[in-house]
Length: 608
Image 1 (cartoon, rainbow, N blue to C red):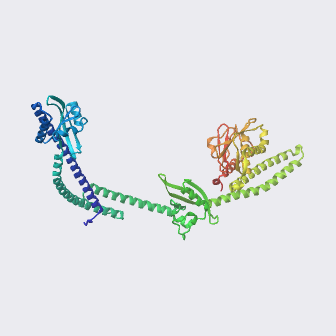
Image 2 (image 1 turned 180 degrees about the vertical axis):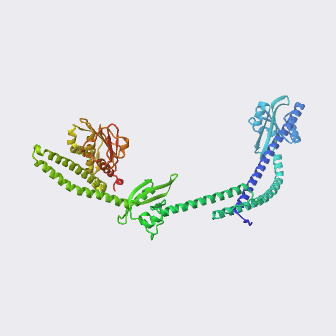
Image 3 (image 1 turned 90 degrees about the horizontal axis):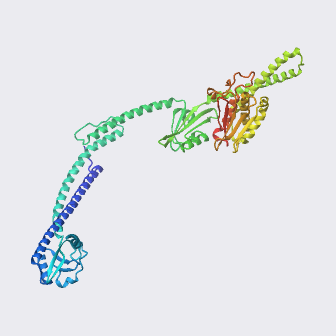
């Protein structure tokens, strides 16, 4: 194996070894200096303490001195013998004698009462301290003990102090420093050599593992490392092989899943469009490319509006990408309206972070065409039936007016009345079918809306239904909250909603009991309208289907004979409310409560 001479790993590893080694030696040197310093200072204090005790003992044996000159000479001679500086200070701090200061200069020495060792000696009998001497320019240690001295005919109480410099410490340390340095350099060089060899061996072991990882990353997932004594990290070797096994397994799974996904996308009859974070096209399935985008068009990295001429689609994509909506559904007409697609857009997120969006195009052209055919059929049939029915009704009414009122023609009159009732029923059915076809095929827009007072519309519709209500002696009780009930809407269609609900409620409301109409704000944007009757109510199983075409239920014990109730009124109400952007539902099992909401302002998402 060829090892790079100057690999970054080797350089870093050697630098770490040398750095740790240097710190270890510096710490050892510092520890050595501190330890030796403490030992020597303690030894100096012990030696000075012993010598001071001997000097005090000799002074007591002499008992007295003739004068201060003889006391100075005694201090000087003993200072030379013990190699110490002796100073005697009385209890007031005044210096009476010093082994290194002539007698004539004693009086000029400063008072020593504030010296640390003097203070300690006066308090406990002995004292010691260390401080820097400005006179000698070095650190000195001081030992002081209390004792009395007799000079002439007077005995003085005070402190004998011994002082010695710390010169021996420095001399000892600097004497050992060269030897310590030579030892440091030798050991450092030896350890550096060992560190280099170790780093080279470690890197040699790691380099093959690194090359193996690069090979796996390059696609050689079958390669594995074989255990060998040359590898310093067997656990790493096993972990690397395990990782390679896992990568191979996951890659195979991903490949299999990708193939399945590609097959599904290829065979799908719906268009799939994947957008990135910027709203640009990242992926499109074959159906999308062939039928919607166009195979001759380069689509990747472009915005949808560049390929699909729809401002509505581009706006929906923008809202999804910018986070203003997570899901949008819309209808899209392409190819001069020949192809119609249901488009569903979904925002793609992972842990709150935008990953893009996906749009699914479902071709509903056939369904739309069939629905249009159905609506056209209902409208055409209704128009075709209305003309002959109108003629039948007119001629029947004319015959009834011409028939004399005698017993001979009473049976003919009865037959004509039956014809008239059934004709009116069929005309009512045709009118409802025409109205349903109108609201289902009506394309709502804001230009059809006007400012409408809901209370006014409700009262106008009640006037139309008042003849039916008067027969049953039923009034309308209206409860409105104190807020505005004005909205933007289609006047004629909303009149139809109230009229159908009134007619439905009057059919089952007991005689003499008023209907209750409640109008109030559901929230700041919607108005809630509820009509309550006291009829038999509607079971839960019927509440979802009651708004379907021709769906009828028995709310009473017996359905009213020859009733004009044909099951289209509530379906018409549902479509009108939906066209306005609201919703309608029913509540109550003992008495029905029909409720619907209307937005105060026209909602763009409800207009098609």
